[in-house]
Amino acid sequence: MPDVTMTVNMDQYILSALKEDMPNEDISTNAVLRGPKYGTADLICKQDGVICGLDVFARTFALLDPATAVQLYAKDGDQVEKGETLAKVSGDMRVILSGERTALNFLQRMSGIATYTAEVVKLLEGSRTKLLDTRKTTPNMRIFEKYAVKVGGGNNHRYNLSDGILLKDNHIGAAGGVKEAVRLAKEYASFVRKIEVEVENLDMCAEALEAGADIIMLDNMSPEDMTKAVQMIAGRAITECSGNVTKENIQRITDTGVDYVSSGALTHSAPILDVSLKNLHPVKLAF
Image (cartoon, rainbow, N blue to C red; front, side):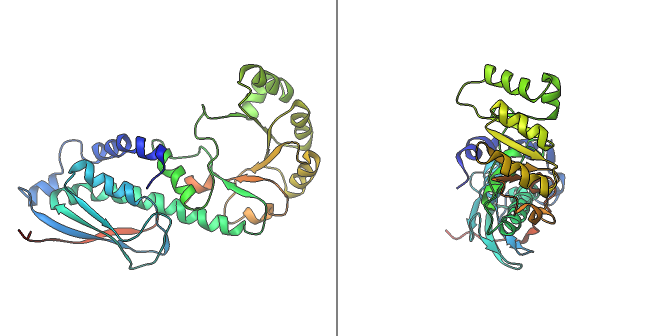
């Protein structure tokens, strides 16, 4: 099952996507099927990867017609292979045809993120560093994309702007400096809120540490400076590094000792995992 956040929120986003694809009618389907006709189709995997979003896939058809049945042969987080049958969809063929693209769009996007995340997590094996996502998500897809990161073995950073205090370069500039930004944040926020500060060099790091930041984000710093920053902080704050981190370059930070690394690439650059709905055909119901 999806996590609770996704379960209670996903219907509105799925319905919005269906409305985008079908504002009035599915004219192609209605042209060839003038009434209900029962049939089945197979969900086929066309690439090796980590599958994610099967419940969203099934829910898309259920929102069009609760009588549509989706029999799943895999679960989110499974490693799947090219040619594998992942599910069978049964019901009114008009519903299957009208919901096909939207259901696949969700499944392909989420599976691509889960697959990419799993590849990056593997590159961090043996280090102390844990992988985080960011808010660099597709508009109205955040609940699905962040869920996919978790399925792939990554961790979620803050979910939205209400979820945590992160003082970035422009916040610091607006406040007049690191110390003043941290002071104002502590004055404003409840004591239960941690304060994270983005720093770009060792001087800023020292200032954030002195100001009492709970988390210090080392942004676009060299591995050498990151190592020095971690040594300077010496466990007095949680450390995170960021800045154009991808699976191609993430191993450069594995020896720095940072606690976390955040990567926007998990959600903005992961390619889809190719899956397809095939073999739709009518089936006579037995009574």
